[in-house]
Length: 339
Ligand code: DAH
Image 1 (cartoon, rainbow, N blue to C red):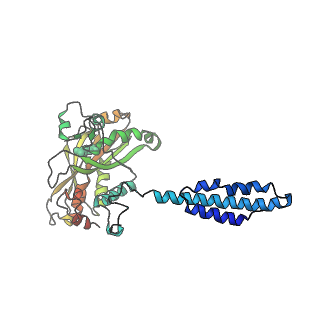
Image 2: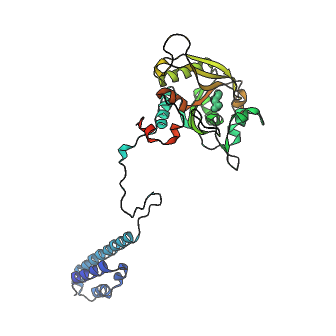
Image 3: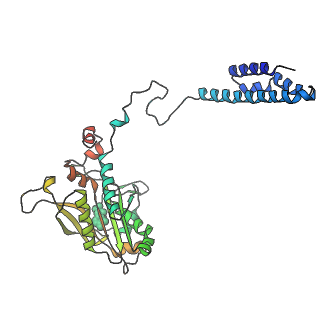
């Protein structure tokens, strides 16, 4: 009878040194061991067979382990997304607690939170769109001069980087039509990036953000819209506000209005009595019947209101920021003010 322990130690050390450990499983010593079982007297076979089997398990495991070790050491860790050579000397990175969320991110969360608490659903708007959603579904007739009011960026395939979040109106209406039957209303706010190809200055930036509200029910009214907007602004600026509207033209609403607030004293407005400075905060109005019709909603049954306005402008007033270009500048001094 052979000494299984001796054979085992020999095979294990061979495996440890081998570059092709699986070959060791074909060792003649192993074959011999297997073969010798049948030559033993029957009463010894059980015991010996068990030992051989234990040896086999141990050797196979050693092969697996060695293979895994070889594999790991032969593959160089390459992270193609890393901005530095991961095989090189580790960089001294800034600790994560030095970072902070961008002011836009924080304020968008606040805005979304206010509307959510009022019962609106909140979604993110798209960043690439088409002519239908940018114009047609919003009742801009073909070749209508109002189209020129939006300095859009277009791709060669004629896709559009949305110049306003109103591109979401048709989608909101279509996607939530069943809500009209089930709950009697649609109430959604879309928030996201917009782009305009215009000259940049302290109040104009090519990339900015808007928030768009859409509400539809059997008897939505302009008064409800003004109440909703006033509540939103009063919560956002944490104070009572004076509001005013003036007529304006947007093809997708009738009537169309500009919603203005009087600059509050706490935010740099006039503190004495008398008329202060009126700030235009957004465009709004009652949704045009053609817009409802285009989304498959019967305008003789349902009415709605919508609004859309710039988010940077809201934030600038809240914190006294003088230049809209700060938001996209990545300037640390600016970002640290909000950390
Ligand atoms: N989309 C318009 C703009 O960016 C703003 C606007 C006006 C949105 C009236 C609306 C609305 O939803 O009803 O110029």
